[in-house]
Every structure is written in C-alpha cells, then in structure tokens.
Image 1 (cartoon, rainbow, N blue to C red):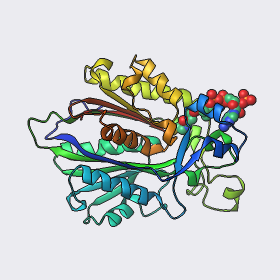
Image 2 (image 1 turned 60 degrees about the vertical axis):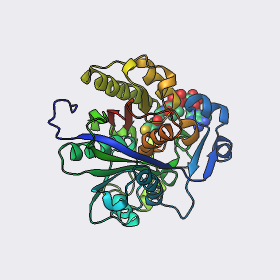
Image 3 (image 1 turned 180 degrees about the vertical axis):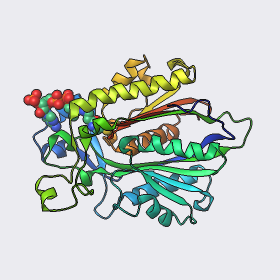
Image 4 (image 1 turned 135 degrees about the horizontal axis):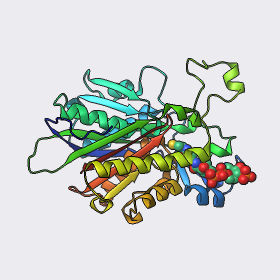
Length: 337
Ligand SMILES: CC(C)(COP(=O)(O)OP(=O)(O)OC[C@H]1O[C@@H](n2cnc3c(N)ncnc32)[C@H](O)[C@@H]1OP(=O)(O)O)[C@@H](O)C(=O)NCCC(=O)NCCS
C-alpha cells in the first residue's frame, strides 16, 4: 500500500543530511589475503572496490552520532530541537537498549522518543516513512532518521560468498515540518513491503531467542550473516523495480520527471538492472557502492548525503529512493527536495 490519499496537515521537508564512513579501508586486495577471491571477480560481479571498517573502539552508535551531528549542523538545528529519533540498523550496539536510545543520550537530547527499526537494508526508507507520518499529522516537527551499521562485526571473514560485500558506515537526515508556503519540498509518497516467506534467503539467526548465544551457535557460525546470493539478486531487482514503478504510477510521473534515483547500494549490477527496468538514465543514478560496499541501512542516506554535499542534488529536484533487504523488506520514497 502506498500513502496517496492520506490526509496530510503538513508537508515534510528534509532539512539536512550527514554521513560518516570510518577511516580504515578494506580493499579487495586485503580480502584476497583472507579468502579465495580476487579483485577482478569482485569488481566484475559487484562493482565494489573497497569498504570502510570501523576502529576496534567504535560502535554503531558512534557512527550514528557523527552522521547525526553533521545532519543537525546542515539543518541549523541542535539536539534540543529534535522530537524523535529513529535508527535503522541490524548491527546495533547491543540487543537492548536500542541504538536510538544510546544515540539520544550521546547527542544530549531531551526525553524524546527513540527507537530502532529492524528492516535491514530498507531501514532508512522505513524510518523515513515513519518520520513523514509523524510530521504530516502535526505530531512532531523535527525527526532524526539514521541508518547506521558496523556490519564487519557480523560478517564471517572465512566466507567468500558474503565477506566481500559488506562495510560499515552511517547516514542521517533531519525530516522537518515545511512551514514555508513558497517551498515546494515534500515527501509525495512512500511504498513499503515485506515478504516474510522469503526470510530464509538472507539472515543472521544467532543471538536471538531461537538460537541464544551458545557453543552451538559458535560451532555453526550462526552469529554471522548467511545468504543465498543469486536468489537475493533476483528478488532485489524485482522488488526495487516494483517499488520504483509504484512510486511513479501513484504520482503520475515518469522517469523523466525524476532528477535522481538513490537505490540501495548492494551491488552495481543490481542497481543497473533496476535503472534499466524503467529506462532510467545511468547519469541520474547516485552510485557509491565501489567506495562503501553494502552498508545495509546506511547506504541510502550515505549516498543521499554525498549527492547533496557534492552539489548534484539541488533544492526543488525530484528524488526517488529505493531499498530492499532481509525480511525480505523493500520500499520506495519519492520527494521534492
Ligand atoms: C553474491 C553475488 C555477488 C554472486 O555473484 P553471482 O554472479 O550471482 O555469482 P554466483 O553465485 O553465480 O557464483 C559464481 C561463481 O563464483 C564463485 N564465487 C562466489 N564468491 C566468490 C568470491 N568472493 N570470489 C571468487 N569467486 C566467488 C562461486 O562459488 C561460483 O563458483 P561456481 O560457478 O564454481 O559454483 C551476487 O549474487 C549478489 O550480489 N547477490 C546479492 C547479494 C546481496 O546483495 N545481499 C545483500 C542484500 S541487501
């Protein structure tokens, strides 16, 4: 279901963005030393050249903090202006409390609502849609949405099927009530989906209540992500293409009306297949997967922030975000920036 036809009291503007990639870089050459792989294979099959890995003393909430501080600065707001914090993550600091609560404390906000969203790589788009609802109904004015991950801590560096793909990072955006009548900025629609029946394709079973931490979990590597790569690939192309199509149809737009597509950055070939699906020119697609690898919930806000900061994404332009992830979750969000 999309969000067309809802009764909106207010419009939603994205007031500022920020991102953070850790300093340490893991190249394909580094991975060649860990598993039976090579740079040529990784680049050809994924487009990934390097990924960033956080320092030993950094945790997900630190990455989230750095990205959030930049987003607040860009929005000319302080932590005290925030009404709610949502963090999309599958690699939070701990099972509980949520990384959003840790972030609230680190930012020094008041006692505002803070919660994590478990939608894997769709976490930012899911979170943004929640922010939009709270703003459109007039409940809240300023909402911080973050996608933050330290995936290298949940990846098995003996498994070449997965370890080449993932990296660490965080991206953040401040969603704000648009009170300026002359400013066309608004989120036009969101379309979110989940297919629980496909949950086995991509998962991390260890550490939950089904497989609590135990010797069994460690012996069977259940503390790491596992994935059926080819199946995920097909479903990623299918779901992201569908979500983009839904967004365009719901708003009676065509690809020509969209200035930028910001897709989840999992694999360059997936992104290219989605763009091809609706004849979207590659020059209008924001891609940074070569630099970051797949940072799950962080890819969309990191790519968004890069596009904003390097001047490609301009105020007034139409932007389409699309994501998919474990669940399988998927979603799109279209907005005038
Ligand atoms: C994982 C992925 C890169 C594999 O690419 P692919 O083109 O589908 O490759 P295949 O799985 O068909 O494997 C081809 C061969 O390469 C081998 N291979 C797998 N990983 C390898 C690696 N890191 N280095 C070298 N060879 C590798 C396979 O064993 C296979 O060998 P075989 O033909 O002898 O069996 C691709 O399927 C993918 O990106 N899937 C989506 C994963 C994803 O995005 N997950 C996160 C979702 S949010």
